[in-house]
Image (cartoon, rainbow, N blue to C red; front, side, top):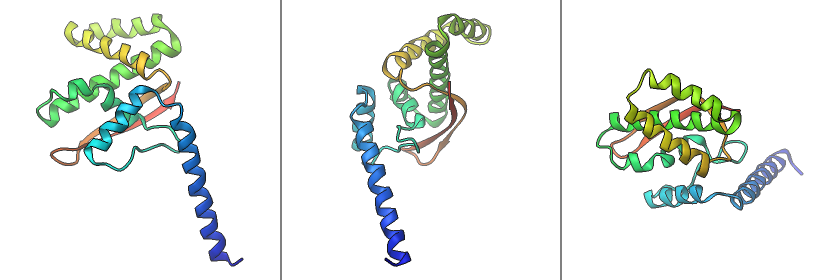
Length: 163
């Protein structure tokens, strides 16, 4: 077999392997992720983006988690604040799942010094959403960037690690 045919064959095998991996992972997808898939399909996008491990990207889960608040926003700045709240709730939820409620309460104690009680209460609501609907995702977000790409679409990029 020639070198070019080997390269084509290798690419085809790699593509099929990735498709099998995504199919295996899709069998264990929680309901919240199925909602995300249907929402993306309604927007006319062709697919959900997976990371190199075959898992759905955290950058797509955060906006889905806070979608009730996102639906009430009127401009990009409001969306940016909602995403920030979602990232904060996500990280506190990860701490609660991996390190326990005691550590989570320490975080809330620090936040109470800096934020109004209404915001804290909203974060607590989304911490519970994170811990119930997205509990299998334990990526702690170290940094994020939310950019405006068009009048109807924005892009979230996150840097995270497993806790």
